[in-house]
Image (cartoon, rainbow, N blue to C red; front, top):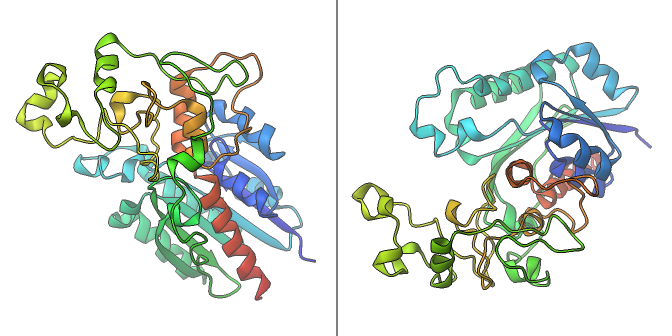
Length: 343
């Protein structure tokens, strides 16, 4: 039986890695420069976390991580903020994150893995750096497939469209067909969790904690309907910025989720009622960190901080929102397994 070894670049808290592990693809190491990722990555995945900027990783270091594997897989999700729809409206000259895909390509060329996969926002395809990345892989004789994937059709209870790339030196490769006929809903994902008040945390799970709300925001969420917008509120509750003509085009903030639909896309600010449609469908609060993690298809018991540690909403919101949904990671891993089985 062939020995397989995976390395996960920009591994974050381990969403992609965990999907690989659950599908039987062994991951030996994850590389990321965020120290907050170490605990969740190593605790849940039995893989080594390397705190590094990938621009400093050498060919020799990466090759040594793969060891004597027969099949070497290089995976990664370069930080997507430079390629997002929001960022695309602005000049990003001088933003160092643009170079991360070039660093990914450098390591791919240096280590010459058998299979490469990348996940990012759909709008990455609008940028020259993505097409340079694809051209590099093809020049290196990889068979390349890429396309926009609806994560909800692979079990993620969330409206999250992502660009997925798969490349192989062994032959043609592509993502597997959808695994779900219909999306999982918010109710199916988080409907059984214990109720909370705004600012409260569950005694048995410190990650099941919701951010506090000001008195005005409590009034706002009480008059918010699932799937509605701030346009439904009484005029005295509408924020000044939304009364101006420039604010009329932002209806999807201060909203509640709907029980029987997928959640909206989780972001790094998913714990805040005013940051998107992140209000709980019926409780007067924003979703908790645990609920956000579950909507990212992390297992209910995925540990993000050591027991007894203080919960920092912004830090954990960043880890959860930036993660590759675990079930999308599983779909990518299954695609690789199906590909290997035909070789």
